[in-house]
Amino acid sequence: MAVQISLFNHKGGVSKTTTAFNLGWMLASKGKKVLLADCDPQCNLTGMVLGFKASEEFAAIYESDGVKNIRDGLAPAFESRPSPIDPIDCEPIAGQPNMQLIPGHIGLAEYEVTLGIAQELSGSLVTLQNLPGSLHHLFNLTAQKYESDYVIVDMSPSLGPINQNLLMTSDFFLVPMAPDYFSVMATDSLASVLPKWKAWAKQAQSLSVLQKATYPFPQVNPKFLGTVIQKYRIRDTDTPSAAFQKWIDEVEQAVLSKLIPSLKECDMTLPEAAYAGIDLAVGKPLLQMSDFNGLIALSQKHKVPVFALSDEQLEQTGIVLERTKRSMNSFNELFSAAADRIIALTEYAASH
Image (tube, rainbow, N blue to C red; front, side):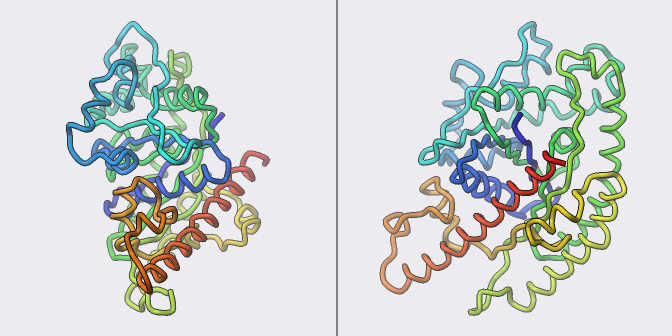
């Protein structure tokens, strides 16, 4: 069964989508089969991966026959159709045969209220009992179809029922952050919210009505993999400037002193031995990188990660090209190390 990893932070602007795309590509380049799931109704991951910019480009997917996006995949459960949930016909990703995309849909937001009612009533209404387990079931079916090793879930910046469901039915989760005051505040908030979500999931797992549903609520215990810190400027020494380093330190301290203890208390952390095995101190970012700057625009234009752009795609020459390629090589090393760490941590969890 595929390992499901969600990228979540209810603070926006922390590079969840670019991290999902670049990290998924790196895992795929290491021989893992990866399924990207765009669960943000804004569909930024779909636009990035497929190079879509205008709404009419999305229409081609939405109006085609078959199950082609996240909303269509969930429709049998949420619209009480007589047909069962089927796996999604994913979009192939040019240049990376080991990766597939479950396209997002703005209409996913329409299911938010219904799912919230179903989860609040804890399956007491027969007509709603299939909803809490439907997302996980859809991902599993689709992952089986493509023989995926990992499902990378890109989530919206909210604390709504869909995100609650996605996170609590994932095997692992990453928390992307930016080095700023609001990420420190978000860390405090997550330390309060996530244990409440865990308590809800534990209750849902104990209810026979949800276990006997057509799409049973899964017996999953999500584990915190770590943080991803990005979007800071660097000095000539390739280290964060003093102003950004201050916030990086504060984010790390908040994670170590508040988030991790809160998650450990409700059994949402991996043992320290798992991190010792990858030579990473507990609470340190799993991945820390500077702002992509101009590389992100080229990445989106050519539909490849920032570390896989060709000289021709960079459209640069001379010393500018050399400087850009050094930056690309740095990102390549960072994402490669992060992918190795994720593989090691998930394999550790599977074997213990």
